[in-house]
Image 1 (spheres, rainbow, N blue to C red):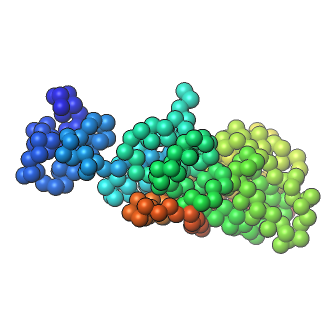
Image 2: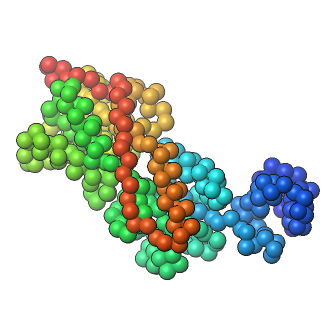
Image 3: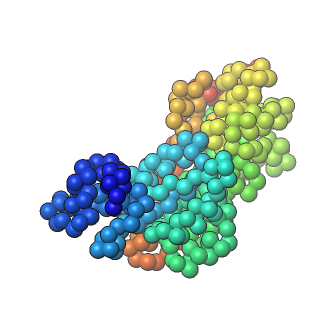
Length: 338
């Protein structure tokens, strides 16, 4: 290995170049933990191990996420990476980029490496492409989906109880005296949004509200602040005094859109988000939102993955996690004049 590569591995492993050389030359006097750190650094840097170490090469685990702009994706990736490292696995972050690098491209790359499994976070598994999916199945590569965007029977999945989260938020707003409660969800067919809508339908059914009355209070939007602002402009003329949103970004957009129309939040419009992303406690007003148990979900996903790696048997079960409604200042009792 060249001097430059030795230095790169040494920096990654946090050791000296001399220690790297001793490990790669097969010196057994090096502490096992140090030796493993050096070999892992060789893998992460993309260099070939010496022949005698290649059978010991740590498996790469792809973490496929749609983007890192959504804080909940970043939090999930961070939690997963830490847990995978603890299992002696090497996480590789794969996220769509502005220049067109897609999930399908990353899966092709992973298939060309020593990939031990793939965790898809909030992504569309079917979007990876038919050929890639076929190859993953042929090679029996373990796959776990976290909050998948589409239906995927026969694959291990870790999700939040979206329907339950929606009903919890709706019950909170109802207890505050709100009767015309709107909902802003993602595009049609997006599975977490479909499940939240099922919760909305169940909530209205219990109150005896017919579908023709509550369906006009639902708006679909892209998961962005702009999408939320556009959606709330559709719902406000229909008399909503509160709205439940399928993400914190949509909720912040709804607040912005309401203010553009001269409304005060929460005095004239109560808003609930979803995710409890970083800094939601510091927004104006601090956002009432459903908190996902990111750490617990990451732990379950890694357990699913590790079991498949250990047994070689694919799992097809789904585990649902409850959310926690974090009540802050974006919701309040409905004004008697509202």
